[in-house]
Length: 231
Image 1 (cartoon, one colour):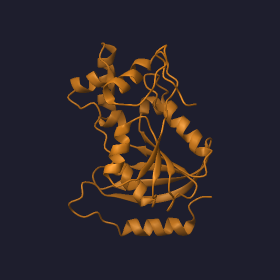
Image 2 (cartoon, helix red, strand yellow):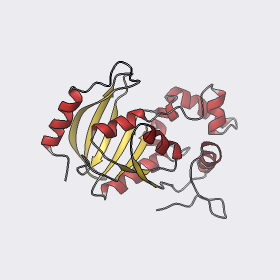
Image 3 (spheres, helix red, strand yellow):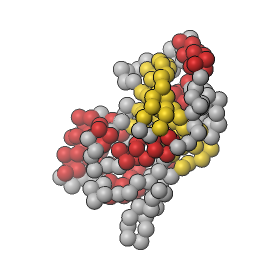
């Protein structure tokens, strides 16, 4: 069951009249919702715009989430090299596809696709960071060497997207406690964290271990030093 045409009209009309006020850091608006049959199942896709930059974000929605509680949600930050080119340096594409497969089997669920390339530093800077990693730095060290924090992403946009869809509470699919805290800071009720650990490759195992050691991600490792996956 999808979000109905009446509900869509109501959500769009509400956002047309919505204004966070001149002192708000960001104001996100729902622009449209359409059916999206996919290889992962039947979804709807919602497009969002904001008043700060030209970035457009999307929500891939399974079922009628309006007014729903405990909706499984995955926040996915854009990763061109992984999502489109299948890079093995990270686990981004695996996380994206695993989330879409899982949500596609659920009654309700949402994947928010956020335009925050390279943990917020942008594509070109991410490639510069890759170059530094080729010289021996880890992902955190490379970002710091370029003058950026470990992670510049923020989750006000994601929270606003969920508010715009009238989602009451969520179960967040993540290994990153900062995502839980970031959403809660913006008024989203997170009732559960669902682990989302991928099988590593020889190219991204060190990357995954750096996530744990330096970025606070929750990933358990077995006696052989391999991540323990939940799939």
